[in-house]
Each structure stands twice: as structure tokens, then as C-alpha cells.
Amino acid sequence: MTTRVGVIGTGNIGTFHVNTLATRVSGAEVTAVFDVDTQRAKSLADDVGARSCDSAEAVIARDDVDALLLASPGALHPQQVLACLEADKPVLCEKPLGVTTEECLFVLEAEVALGRQLIQLGFMRRYDPGYLQVKAALDGGHIGDPLMLHCVHRNPTVPPSFNADMAITDSVVHEIDTSRWLLGEEITAITVLGGRTSRHASAQDPQLVLFETESGVIVDLESFVNCQYGYDVRCELVGSDGVVNLDNPTVSAVTAQGNRSTTVPADWQTRFGPAYVVELQAWIDGVGGGRYTGASAWDGYATTAVATAGLRARATGDRVEITLVDKPSLYDGACA
Ligand SMILES: NC(=O)c1ccc[n+]([C@@H]2O[C@H](COP(=O)([O-])OP(=O)(O)OC[C@H]3O[C@@H](n4cnc5c(N)ncnc54)[C@H](O)[C@@H]3O)[C@@H](O)[C@H]2O)c1
Image (tube, rainbow, N blue to C red; front, side):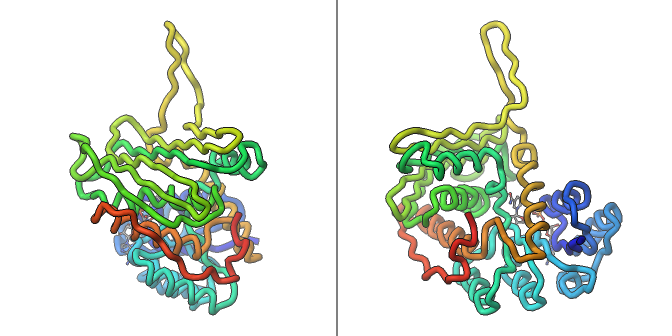
């Protein structure tokens, strides 16, 4: 059976997803797209044999659209996800679920009222082989009890308009989700430290972010979005009986003249390209039967709650505690 997908937002990631769905995912067909940049939407639609529509609502309502992929700006996600729920259609929503905790809760409550999951969040690291191996090492008991998680998230450059708050809401959110998912528990407090700023940055950069979890695991993250040299995402999970390291995937290494050198991924597409393919394939395979393997609306809500607490922590310099609402039973055991 083919799942016919409508895509809303055909910018960076939307274009990447449309091309992935059209060329690398089986059982999927992109039938309709919309972007306020109608030229871009039309050109992409022509490339993959889809129709370019006049509005997001028109895409959602189409009879030849079974499921939606949202890659519009984050502020539009709550309203567009709610429209998908009203149409009773599954939706893969790029992060974030919403910009504020309140609007995420509103979406969550709408899905709970529906009584079944239609929403998946686009946290693709859950499908990355390296992260899956870190999780398998922990869940398999190979490193004992988790104690600390050290993370690095470096981007080569960002536009001058990308400020220190955006580093938390757009970039650090990935570690918020992966920390919760890897450790299988919620984050209860966040602290954000600035420091000396890089001469390449137009705002505070790097930042050191600390999460504390329910069981007392400490997560430290260096978020550095102007590191210049490449896209470098790594982590080390320290357990009571061992350590598991996640390094950049190495394709080849040159050893000569007493040196061994490997490459660093150039950008997020290079590092996580395969994970997006697996993510989309898993979503397509699951939507028909309502079997979701990825992040849920609960994960979207929890992530935004931590990120918005992080904005307060950054502004005040304080350690900010996070209290979530009770988790609705709809999300019990929903995701690994
Ligand atoms: N999971 C990831 O790793 C990942 C990576 C990149 C982006 N994202 C997320 O995807 C979303 C899009 O990011 P991007 O980098 O592609 O941004 P972008 O600015 O490149 O693309 C956004 C697109 O949305 C369009 N748009 C604006 N208003 C719209 C509307 N009312 N309806 C439909 N489309 C509209 C814009 O014209 C633009 O083409 C963001 O929420 C971002 O956080 C996730």
C-alpha cells in the first residue's frame, strides 16, 4: 500500500524530506505540497510529480493526502498539527511541537481527547545507528547504571541573526530529546552558563548547558554554533561499570608520516542524512497501523518545557527547575 504524503513547508528540511520520500522511501508518494514561497513549492512539486496547493489547509483536506509532513517554521506547528488532528490524518511534525509549553499542552490534550496517537515529532537522532548503539549498551546492562552524559554539539557557522536563545530552542533541543530518550527519564532542572565568546560569533557562543534528571544523572552539553571546522556531534555516557562513546561516523582515515587523520562531517545533512531516511521509512511503515517508533507529542511537550526553562536559565543565570504535567496514559510505553 502506498501512503500519499502532503508536505507543508518546502525550505531546507522540507525539500530534503520531499526528495527523500520521493527517492529513498518505499511505500510513499508525495502528492501535494504548500509553501508561502509558491515558486519554490511549485518547482519542487514539479520535480517529484506532486501538486502545488494554495494553502496548508488545502493540502490537509485533499483526498489524495493520507498523511502530512510539517516542515514550516516552528511557530506555525501547533495550529497546523491541530488541523491534521481535526482531519484525522497522521502527521510527522518537525521539531518543535510548539514554541511555548502552553501551546504544546493544547496540542497534547487534543490528541489525548482523540484517544490515539497521530503525531510523531521529527527527532531523527533516535534512528541514528550510533545513538541506537549507545542506547543498546545502556539498556543491555553493559555499562551499569548511568551516572553522567557528556555531550558536544558544534555547528560550523550560523547566520548573524541566530542568537543565543535560538541555540537553545533550535540546536540544544536535540540533546534534550536524546538525553530523555537515552536515559528513559525526564529532565528536572537546567542551568545555562555563558563565558568567553568566540570572535566568530554575533551572540554568546559557546554555551555550557547542564541538565539534571529524575534519578540524578547530570548531563553537560557544550553548544557551540560557530566552531568553524565542521559539524561535530558526540557524546560519552558514563556508567557505574563502564563508558560508551559516540564519535562521528568515520568513512576513511589517512595514516601517514606518523599521523592518522579522519574527516569531520561538513553539515547536519552529512552527519544525519541516513537517520532521516530511516526516520521517514519507519514513519511510513507505521502510519497505516498507528505504530509509532519515534518521538511522540509527549516528547515534543517535554522538550519544549525544558527548552523554555533553558531560556529563563540563560536570562537569569539561575538553575531552573522543570515540572511537567502528569503523563497521559496514551503515551505509556509509546516510544522506546
Ligand atoms: N530535525 C531536524 O534536524 C531539523 C533540521 C532543520 C530544521 N528543522 C525544523 O524544521 C522546520 C523548518 O526549518 P527549515 O530549516 O527548513 O527552515 P526554512 O526557513 O528553510 O523553511 C521553512 C519554510 O516554511 C515556509 N513557510 C513560511 N510560512 C509558511 C506557512 N504559513 N505555511 C507553509 N510554509 C511556510 C517558508 O517559506 C520556508 O520555505 C523548523 O521547525 C526547524 O526547527 C528540523
